[in-house]
Length: 116
Image 1 (cartoon, rainbow, N blue to C red):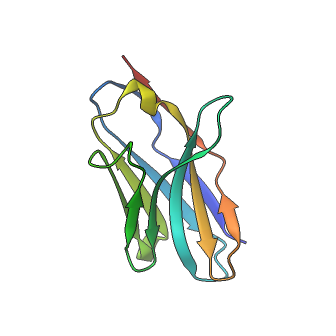
Image 2: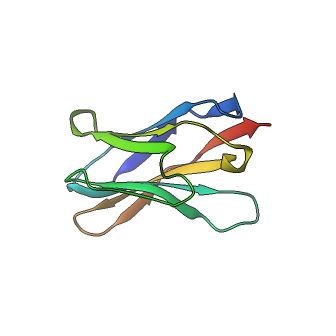
Image 3: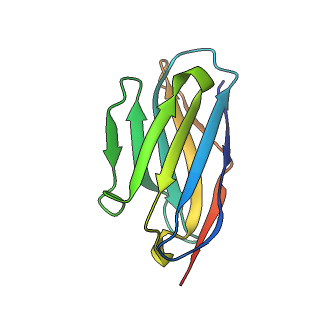
């Protein structure tokens, strides 16, 4: 099954930018959709952005106009460009992939902290 590894998180000031990357490996079936989710301690994991194999994108209302999801199929990588970051964007961000057999895989997550 697909393995996902996130990178690019860290600490940034309000208004700053970060780019998250998620590399997929051990791919045995085509990946239909790749998503980013985030979760704060004690809260439910929430959808942030998604991109299909056909490059159709979808965003949570809270990040529209600030975040951009993209994918590089040659590198089996999905990116999340995060601009105009706010303290409320502070969370652990998770990469998610759904393959052609509708199996879901999650990365281990990466911390993003936005200081005020």
